[in-house]
Length: 195
Image 1 (cartoon, rainbow, N blue to C red):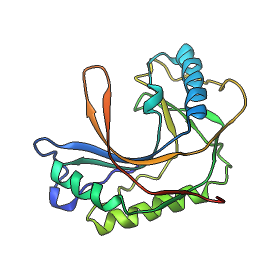
Image 2 (cartoon, rainbow, N blue to C red):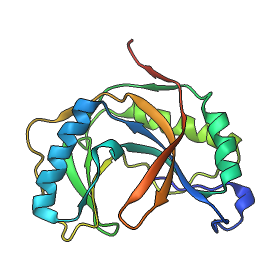
Image 3 (cartoon, one colour):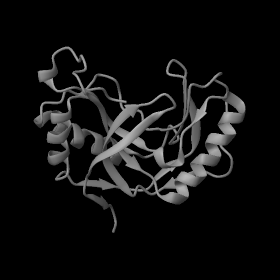
Image 4 (spheres, one colour):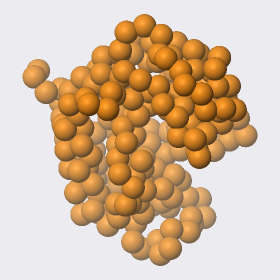
């Protein structure tokens, strides 16, 4: 994931009533249902908390904390940023051990240049709005489990999944005692390559 912030926020300290923002692709319903089966299989091996089906997404840009006013400004701007997507094959389950997250992602040799180009284009638009891209490399994944108890190998059930993104959203993440609650702030106009 990338991390970013608006330069005016100084050292990244969250302001009062701040929100954590990210831009992500949401999968089609069939893929989301299949990913739930992957999450359940991974849960049997690793434990943790299974992500709700409606929350499954692939983060393109993680922005970090922003004030409500900054979030509103960004929502107005990004509603005019067209994004072009293609189907994405998810073929493996992996783990971010330090973050205690199990995820689904493309095979290492997958042809996903279009996805990296999309992320670069988003950050170009975000940069024009004053957001700063973090140094961490983009690692495409869909989080399946959080707070896993152990990092163990897990083979996804069934064949690789061909994910057809159906929505690109700017989302505010608000933590609760049980899990983060997502609120959609804007939808980016999306075009599927080849249509």
